[in-house]
Length: 312
Image 1: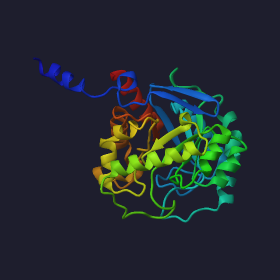
Image 2: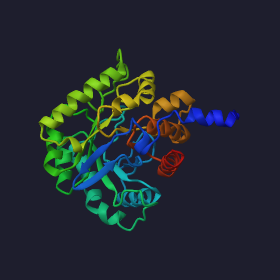
Image 3: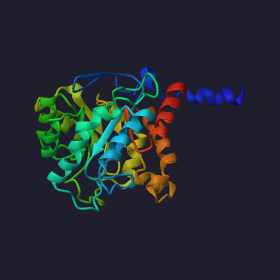
Image 4: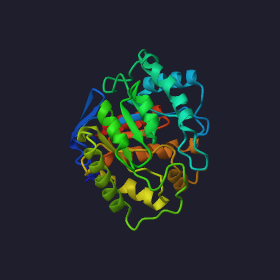
């Protein structure tokens, strides 16, 4: 056998994206009147920080910049824009609820107009894009709900049913992120005997909480919380065994972009220099069942997603 043929045979053993990927979510996601059917090409979620202390150094309090950046990411291939008014960094103090609302509401009010003239990169892209609100505070989510968002990206590990009830009332999807303890507090020494068993138990508990709050199953997504209350070996185990989270039967978002675990593996201190490692994690995530990839660099992510799709 030709060595090239042998390699091709080995490659065929990897799960494929889309309908042939047994790890990929198959079902319906509903988000404020929008319906997205899976399996389909994984979605690219663009990170938009309306703050001045993002770990990657790419945020700004300038509303004009934020709206322009949102439209730019949509033109680059973003299916979802994830906007946050507070950095999740634990070495910075939290902003007040009032300040977070002050940063977010003007953007939400003008988002639709800002992106309506952006041109989708190809026919498979979601357009208009979904709008995701990145917050852990119910007061912020409630204030923003008056204007509207499609996904509530709850980085607070859903301690109770409040945010789920907000989503049930508004029709927004709820993204449940795994973590331990309170947001904005360092959890650098948290360890787990078995991180995958921890994640499975956590998501079973939190999805049951959301369902009991009246949120339909079709409006729930999961996020394993890379780098949140986890050590590097935990994060790597999640990448290797993401299919176990996907097997729970909900769309899985993988927050891969420029994470510290990539810096640890590659010896790269500056987050902005970790995009090549991010692309590698995107590919691994797609092959193991990720439905959404949360990233800073949309052109690189779009190219990786599209290449995996074409190769499959």
